[in-house]
Image (cartoon, rainbow over all chains, first blue to last red; front, side, top):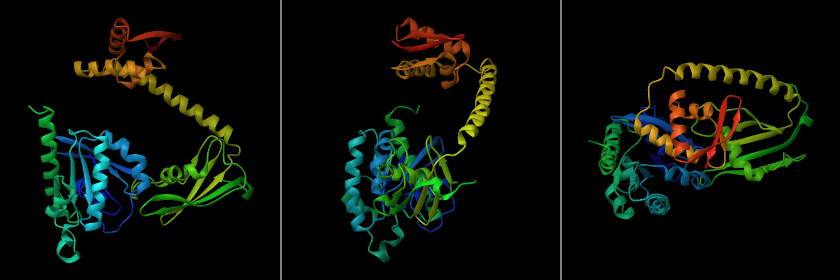
Length: 164
Length: 186
């Protein structure tokens, strides 16, 4: 599973939420990429968290997108970032086929009412891909994220007839 | 570590742009850094070598290459790299190489002993191995023990796989080194 998105959209926080790591609110950019292995029910997820800076995306995204079973595009739900994320979706589509779903995470949904961010339905309308809303800094959202991932992985497994 | 300032033959400051990533901010080369190494081209590689991943992971302070080594000092998101000439390192490397060779040899013996006890791989895995080996040997040569280690197989298992591949003309014997057969793709 690969997480891509522009800088500071919350990819690493999402990975930390999933891995039950402590979430501090300090932003420190991921340099290059970071790898985590996380067990979610029957699945062992190898989670590639790619740094959002342009030079990292250019260098690493191609290789890691190619081997992905699922790609999450993380946005911070601000109008500008959502619009810019369309470019990333097109970019990812070049490397993967239909069998690898590209899912959007409209992160920072806690700021929708106070900060002019878009709710996840609006983000979905703009991105034209399945979109889930999330607040990755909130540890209580972990189950929600796990359920999203499980749901998508179950669909993939079913498609590949890996499950009995 | 003992060194004089003239052992530093280059320095670079790699900055970090939040949108674009690492970039070379400043450099000074007193003499050429090394054959085929351009600080401009390698700025991002150097930056990642020292700072890759997330902050929680331990980071190296110095990295030794064949013709030079770099000692790096981070300041916030910037990284100051000092390029140094390896001095009196050849002898140390030779000594360390001896230790490494001893460890590798000891592990080979242990692995061989353990491989005789290891359980059989299932048929799917063996089929996958048979698919990968001809690809692996394409344009290169490898010995049976090497291949056995790559796939964690027992001696009998690897020989069964190699014989099957040889019969189906996907691989051939290229050489023999001691008691080991060297294989290549057909």
